[in-house]
Length: 180
Ligand code: SF4
Image (cartoon, rainbow, N blue to C red):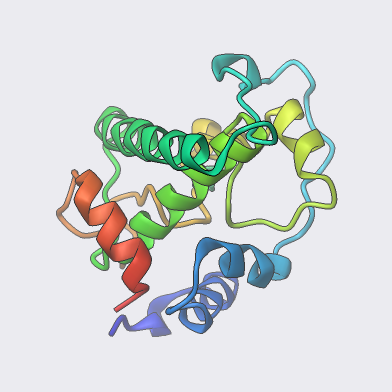
């Protein structure tokens, strides 16, 4: 079990949210994310949505959707490993955290066409995905290495482990199993 005592109040709130959703899916993670402030107004010129092909799932069959999720899981796992290496950040000692976040990003990639951050509450997800501020890697991460999902941890973070790689199988297994 992770020791949350070393965290700031806001991070404790975040981790408490995680602990409450240990055995649930990312959908519940999203529901529990109301502790975060809504996305602010931001620079329109900073957009990442164009980096991602819009691929909404509304016209997909169940089989096609399953395949799309599988492909998105692979894509977001690869992205995450590469971005971690590029930024010198680390995964959490509890790899179920990055696993659940990566799964949430992959599901948003399929449902919204962009990897909208899965750890926030949005009034209008489609609008947020189009605006791009919270598409992963979000602006706070790109500008200040701040990842409130704890997917990319700087070395001074008390939860940062030594792991710099997560496999697709780990993402699948750990995101289904929940947090340890
Ligand atoms: Fe969410 Fe930003 Fe972290 Fe990506 S980098 S998981 S968008 S907080």
